[in-house]
Amino acid sequence: MREGVNMLVVFSEDLLYFVLRGLDSRELRCAALVSKRFCQLVGNPYIWRYLCETVFGFDHSLVVDKSFDWKLYYREKSAILQPLNWVSLDNCGGDLKPLPRQCHGAAAVGNKIIIMGGHQFQTESYTRYSDIWCFDTDLLEFSLLEPKALSPIPQLSRNRLVTINNIIYSFGGILQSKQKLNTVFKLDLQELTWEALQISGTVPDPRCDAVVVSYQEKIIVYGGSVSDLIFPSDLHVLDTKHKIWQKINSSNSPSERIGSNGVVIEDKFYLYGGGLYSKEQRKFLNYYKEVWCLDLKTYEWTLLHQIQTDIGPSITDFFNCVAIGNHIFFEGGWYSGVYVFDVI
Image 1 (cartoon, rainbow, N blue to C red):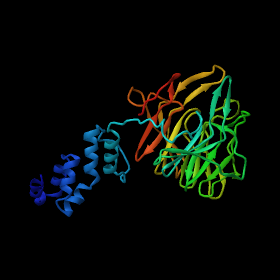
Image 2: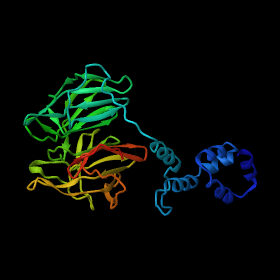
Image 3: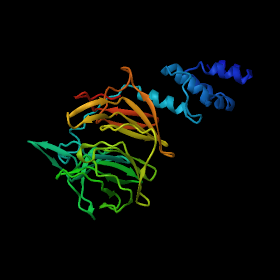
Image 4: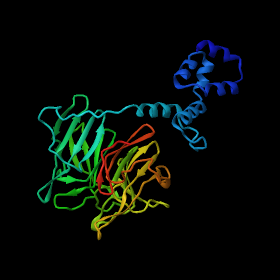
C-alpha cells in the first residue's frame, strides 16, 4: 500500500484527490503517514464527505455548512453503527436505590446522573417524591443526596433538569396538589444546597412536560402543558447569570404539541415529535413525525424534515433523546397508544 502511495507523490493535486477518494478509512490513515503533504490532502473535508456519501448512501447534493467536520462525522457514524448491547444494572449498588418511579427529572454531571422527584401510581392516585439521588456511573452505585434546603424541596414530578457549569437547574413540574409550577430551583452540588431562584422578566406560565435544554449559560424552555390542558408552542429563555426570563417571539414556529423532545448541538436546538391532543376526546388527533431546528443565535425556526416513509423513528411522544456528537439517539416513547422500547 505505502509503495503505491509513494508513486502518487509526483501527480497533480486534482488527480491525487481523485485517487484518495477511492480509498476506505483504513487506507486513508495509511496514506496520511506517507508525508506531510499527504496528511494535508487526506484531511480535506472533500475526501471524507465523499467517503460518507459512498458508505452511508448520502445524496451528493446535500447542502451543509462549509465548516462541517466530515471526518468527525464519519468516525461518529461508524461507531454508533456498531452492535449496541444493553446491560442490566439491577443488582448494582446494594440495597440503597430509589423507589420505582416515572416522570422524574434527570441530568448528567460528569460521570454522575442526578435524579429528582418523579411519581408512582398507587391505587387510584399518584404519589410524588421529593428525594434527590445521585448515580455514580464509575462505581455503579446510588447515593441519596440531602442538600441544605434554602427553599423547601417539593414533592414534584414531570419537571425537567438541565446542567450548566456543574449546577443542576429544575424547571416546572406538577405538585402533589396537582398545581403546576414555573419555579426554577437550583441544586449546587459543590455546596450541596437547594434553593428556589428569584427571577425577573417575562416568566413562563406554570407548566409541566416542557422541553427544556441548556445552551451556554441559558435555559431554553419550549412548550409543555399549562392550565386547562393547553399546550402552547411558546419559547422562553432564562439567562441564569443575570436571572432574567425573556419570551421569544419568532416566526414560522412549530404548531402546538405535547410530548416532543429535543437536544442542542452547537448553536442549534433540534426538536422532534409530539402530538396534537384533544382534552375533549381524550386522545391524540395527530402525531408529528417532523424535525424542527431553532437557531439559538437568531431564535428563528426552520422545519428541517417531515418523515413520510417507514425510514425514521415510529415513536412521536414522550420519548428520550440524547445528542452524541452530530447524532441524536431516540429511545422508548409511544406512538398510537403503543409503548416501544427501541433505540433509533
